[in-house]
Image (cartoon, rainbow, N blue to C red):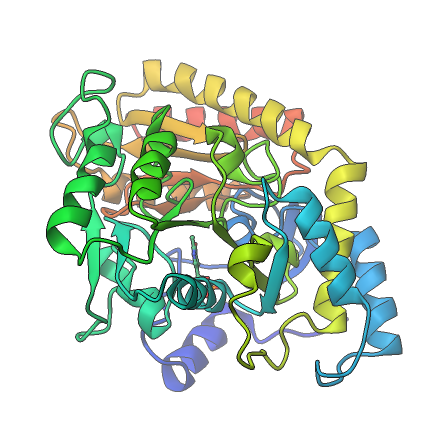
Length: 430
Ligand code: PMP
């Protein structure tokens, strides 16, 4: 039996050797040592239902045997050569991505993280349009790199005291707490309309791109209302401004569609993806139409971007999603979860709003006056963890319970989470 150092020693080493920006979750955190599909196991062998999937990474399940086998085969035959030499996995993966992404998206650039993919997408937009002005959304999250962080609107992730200039922020389509104090649909999508004012008043007239997550993840699972992205695209087209959609958290069947933007019937000009593409292997990409992509001609490559092993993982992920119909399961289990949460909200007033698509769902915890109930949420998440359920948390006030489980989660699993949540909320009189 392998021995483990355990949570206490990990926390001590973390404090001594890891930069303090990396927070940890739970007051009494377990050490995870094993994963199997929708389940995690700690050092004591205790089993947990994973309802967060490492923030929408493990869409196909932990250590999925079909994917692991392909990765192991590749590790054992060829792990890496400089990508100026020929190997075939990355071109096969790029071909597959061209097939499964919306519209004319065709040519990919592979890298390793979501931040890099967004940084690359913003660079491509600059090369194509010759502008380096951008519009982003309030409370969006796009990464830790210089420009990626500069277009990130969520306060807690804007660490850089001197972000890049030329970036304007538009109000985010957060209907539960509309930043413009309006109500949908009477608002006539004022949050989208304001993008035109921003272009006219805060830019030189033709900004390179507008970047947004199709559903804002860290902002608290903020799902735009119907028509939002269509209106945005109409405005952008008038000013030759590109639409960059960040699918880092929402891609690969998470919302019941291969990419969340398909729920809004809009074709992005450039799209970014990461996390679930590798199901745990580091791989990310940005993809654009041939017309846009073909302007990126100066040398550009990422050492490990699209390496044979990560690309094997990507190919295995796409096959698994298709062969096991994860789109349908994400859709069906998402409906079941939201219906169950809606029932709980009738009994437990702390649940103020439920929103999501497929298996990307948030339940916002609020007090009677709608103020964020973040302490209560922490207590509930701790108790759920003790009962064997790992559930996430996000939102600018850290008061949104986040359900982003592996897409292989079953009907019985969802009933189990809902029953336990009901019990915990009842015991805590919330
Ligand atoms: N975009 C979105 C929507 C994200 O959620 C994240 C990470 N949470 C990133 C970009 C950055 O990805 P990474 O941490 O892989 O650089």
